[in-house]
Amino acid sequence: MESGLERPGAITGTPVDDEPTGRALEPTGPIEDVSSRPEAGRVGFPLLVSASAGVVGYAGMIITGTRLAPLPNPPTGVWWFSLPAGHLGLLRVLFYVSALLTIAAWAGVGTVAWRGRLRTRAAVGVLTAWSAPLLIGPPLFSKDVYSYVGQGLIAHRGLNPYSVAPSVLGNGPLLRSIASVWRHSPAPYGPLFVSMARGITAVVGSSIVAEVMVMRAIEIAGMVLIVVFLPRLATRLGADTGIALWLGALSPLVLLSFMASGHNDCLMVGLIVAGVALSLDGRRALGLILCALAALIKAPAAAAVVFLAIDELRASGLGGRGWRVLAKVVAIPAATVVAVTVAAGLGWKWLEPMNLRIPAELRIEATPTVSLGTAVARVLNLVRIHAPQAGTITAVQTIGGVLAAVGAVWLVYRFRSDNLVRVLAVLLMLVVLAGPTLWPWYLTWGLVLLAATRSQRSKVLAIAAGFSMLLAGPIGTPMLHGFAYWPVALVTVAGCAWVLSNRRWSTVILGHGPTA
Image (cartoon, rainbow, N blue to C red; front, side):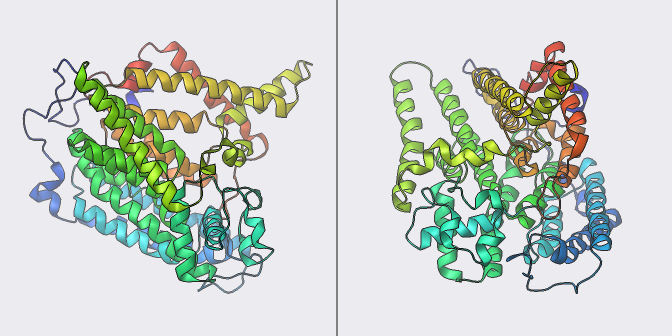
């Protein structure tokens, strides 16, 4: 498996680490951005064909999605444009044909990127063309955007979304649009995002369609941050900027999760990428502020704050300066959190673990710990050892959580300046894969960062970026059912066995040498 994670020597101009503090020096020679070569500037026929096919594919998903997607006010709701009523079976076939066309188109653009000929300007053009139909169509693969609207409306009405659930809004079109598991749960997001949602509901009014479309403006901001700072981060790390954008901005996983579904993960990831890039460029205070703002969107972003703070402390050394740096790296994110929380006026209940109760209780078979727990329970019952499935899953999830915590501590202890980005991404992936619930868009937390590293040529990452969104159905329901827990459990066991048996796993994860 390690051969799929990186291709050593594929990019020149790698940073050199020879300082006692472990901080990576600037490259001794300029990093050549192959995407800026004159011959790479020509938008060739393969790129044009792939870009056009992607537009057709995404448009097909949106058009068929006007009947298959999670529409507002189900079952009578419609989008602002819609197909006439038709045969749902045929529409599903057309939907997935369109989805496969988008994957093929993305792979076609990848052939250009892997040859070092995808310029940033061309990538942005493809991104704009592919995003256009997604931004005007209904949400796909998730109903979460309706929860965002509901939490914003609660705050707009003077209530606290961290204390009351969307059910307080009463039975109406919006409540019926929200997934049933979220109707009776407080907001699990940070006060910065809830304040944004409150502002949107205050300005737009009571039109659910308009609120959803304006809510996507937040995700556009996150995507802009990714497009601006991901190439910058890739250049610094000696990776190819075209592949970085192909994997971290143009992939079906990213576009469907961020532009179509409208998940707030987009803004969180965008702020992390910008914060880490600016921090590595020497603007550490601004980097810490941006990563703290990301944590005020969703809590996992706090890991970036920890990595940047520890890296700065290690670079400062011991003595009086070390204490001053410690005060700075603690005070800056703390002041950011306090300022935003006070300005939001919603108190500190957003920090209560109970607000994450629903994500911890959902059990879908795409989640490794859930499938492994189910498989263990079935095996034990086959050998006549009574093991309740729910209790076995809980036990496996607990073990997974403990191992993830130990792994996180190990990663924090072992990372260096030259592999900070890579190890941060691995930690975020570890949190997702060992967590209680795995939805496809959670994978973007680590995948977008890995796109800027030398791991960008990983076939595993490409497969995840291309196909993982299909783990959810058009309406947002999990697609793995029945005996699907067996293959997920077997893959989980195989991955754990590889980690335990392969002596090079730490080399692959940490990337010994400048492979961050």
